[in-house]
Every structure is written in C-alpha cells, then in structure tokens.
Image 1 (spheres, rainbow, N blue to C red):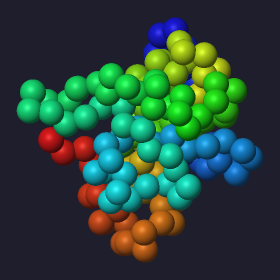
Image 2 (cartoon, rainbow, N blue to C red):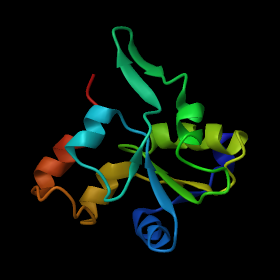
Image 3 (cartoon, rainbow, N blue to C red):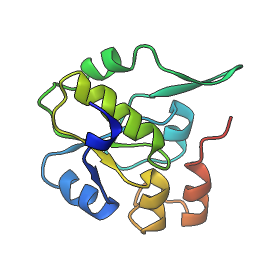
Image 4 (cartoon, rainbow, N blue to C red):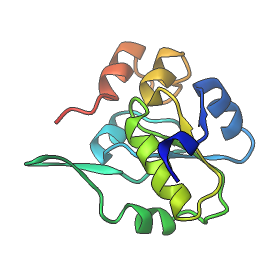
Length: 133
C-alpha cells in the first residue's frame, strides 16, 4: 500500500464519520494532544521528538493494536495531514482496512470551527496544535 491508495476525507466528512461509529486516532505527540484535541480521540504518536529531530515511533503499530481492532473504523489525524497519511499507509499495510486520513489535520479542524473541546479561543487552539521541535 502506498500513500496514493489511502482514502483521504475532509474535516466535515471526518466529523460525519465520527458520528457513525468511527473512532478518531490522533497521531500527534502526547504534548500536542494534551494541549487540545478532537473530543473522544485516542492518542498514539506516530513520531517523537528526539535530539536528532523527529523519529518514527517504533512501537506505533503495537500501540495501536493494544487499543484498536483491525476491523475498527478509524479517522486518523495529526496536525496538518502529513504524519496521519504515513500512519494510514502503515495501518492499511498492517490490515486496518477502515483507516481514513483526515485532510488538513487538526489545524484544518480548528480553522473550520469544529473544535469544541478545552474551552479555549480558536487562536489558542490553533497555536496549541502545531508540532514544534
């Protein structure tokens, strides 16, 4: 499976999917997730900050397997869509046939006025969702 084969949905479609039994899998770092996230989201970082820069989480698939079944329906998101696209490729290759990438990530979710959690103003939510080394 390659990135071109991943099903990517916009934030409005993602919101609709979440209302019909899809689960949101946030692949941002724990730090990013703790600042602000989609309500009810699961968090399994796809990458970590390291002295040498961003490095892939070697336990990503086993971490996901500990909380999700391969038949679960997943909307996968990060900050802007890059990490979630890579995560979807790995998930699909591992047999998670219902993984969907959310185009634009949490930044687009916030920009679209969909962020309802944390009680923070949109400007702060948008700042909180950035991946900063």
